[in-house]
Amino acid sequence: MKRGVMPKPELFTSTTVFFCDIVGFTQIASESTAHQIIEMLNDLYNLFDDRIESYDVYKVETIGDAYMVASGVPIPNGNRHAVEIAKMALDLLAKTVTFEVQHKPGYRLKIRIGMHTGSVVGGVVGTKIPHYSIFGDTVEIAGLMESSGQPMKIQMSEETTNILDQVGGFNYTPRGIVHLKVGEFQTYWLIGRKEAKEKE
Image 1 (cartoon, rainbow, N blue to C red):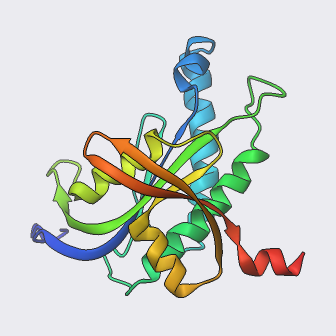
Image 2 (image 1 turned 90 degrees about the vertical axis):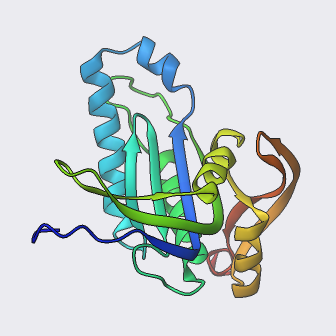
């Protein structure tokens, strides 16, 4: 890119995509100044940015109050992508529990998290401010896993759950069939890691 050569779009057959957003963000925004909202988002997403450094993931972007991360792109990592995203999701959920909103003392922020595994196309978009992004049904379904989820829970698709089941080490529970605009999906709640539970 520095030499003026744009990387070609590439198909990644197996990746896991993560979305989260803030529950009741519109309500919080209506009770806050623009400066307070930007400060809150910066505080939260700087915290998240620091945490995701510990995992083999790529932060795709933040759009308003939505935070999007993927694993398995731009460097494939076998089937580790589901494990890395699952560990990261549990970490970010735990950090949110203790997150303090500066302008709302005592207020407890809640987030919704969704994860899905599948193929994506990755490539650089834009020329003035080029940005590596990903596209495809997997991205849309991951977003729907988040939006159809529940506060302070991690909803994941059967595709993601199957990989975690093969690898082992995670606790999850079936949610049942969820009706989304792109079809019906069997989904699961990611509860925690088995290793962490055994140490307690």
